[in-house]
Length: 93
Length: 131
Image 1 (cartoon, rainbow over the protein chains, first blue to last red):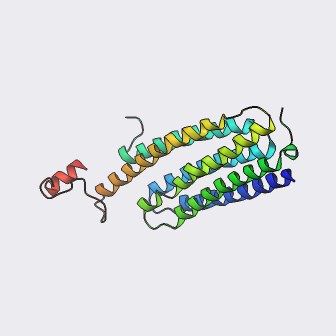
Image 2 (image 1 turned 120 degrees about the vertical axis):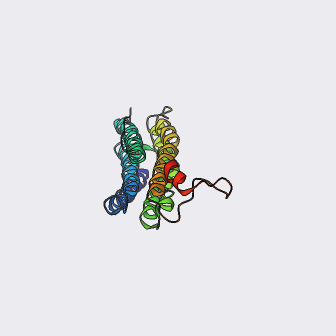
Image 3 (image 1 turned 30 degrees about the vertical axis):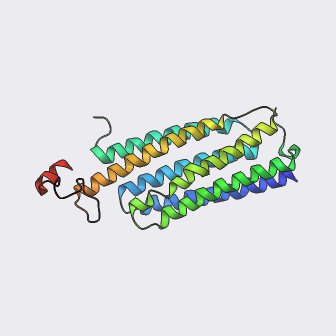
């Protein structure tokens, strides 16, 4: 019974997170200006991280946690670099 | 040692499912708001739903699940939670400042001025230099 509850919740939340990633991808491709595309990319990173953690709950393995941590670090660094590029025109001055 | 999910108590399974669904639903609502809000400065607020309680709910679910299923305290997911909570305002404020800078440079309408009040508002050529 509890396995059914957990697997159903994992499946539903994976579906919701994939839909959220698709919506953010729509905004990233359509977004009228560059900053919309950057926030779309940041939202995709966050949702991919959440999706990996839900994969970890579904399979019962801890290895997905480390992949999620790496994705979080990379998302932060790439978004800050892109914001710096928008602000100054170059990343490393 | 990881036990399969069938051995969990029913209350733990219900708690894990609740936090998972709350987190994923908040991430989805944030993405929908991000698609539908009209201007960039309004759109900036929507994904913060996913990065505050979206992260919080799913990390709480993962912590409860792994703590009960491996019968020891597993709270390393709190690293992701703290990291995202610290870094999300930094990225969003940097992006908002960059967008404001670009809007001021392009002289768009509806963007707040750099100087507020008539006495400290400089000449237009100074504004174009300062922005």
